[in-house]
Length: 186
Image (cartoon, rainbow, N blue to C red; front, side):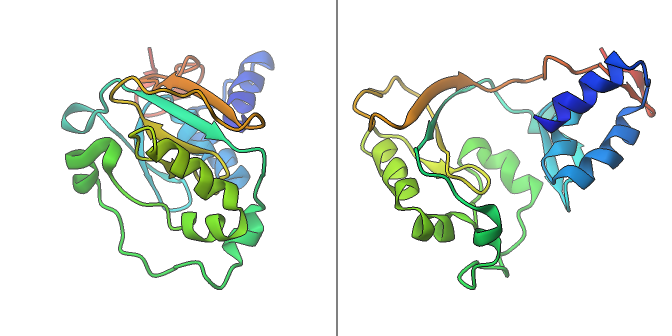
């Protein structure tokens, strides 16, 4: 991903750029990229430029997830240019997230994506038949669900990719750049 490339080139070329400098570059590459540079779970707002670490009462517990990637893909530009995209949603707030963790929130892109790519809805339904609450990632077409219990994941259409993973509490490359506020992070 772009954040890993930025961190790796920073180290490989001995640039010694701080996280803050890398984030100013990252925000130009995409809204998710600054988050992936921070190296830990965080609440992100704006265009990816407002990052608040999720620590203490807001810390995420370790969890397992299933990610399903249907064969069909989606064009992000087409989703964002759709007249059906809801643009006046209530803002999500961190206190609501802290109370609900993995059940929190919504993806305003999901309904449009499902209309453009029926496989997204099929993947979500497939997860629901296994007792899991499926939701779309970003602009899709991958969907995910927390796995609080073992689930039978056999029977997915052959072209779909199905993977079980655990959330990372800390990115393996965290500390590869200095934080101007705190020095080199462990």
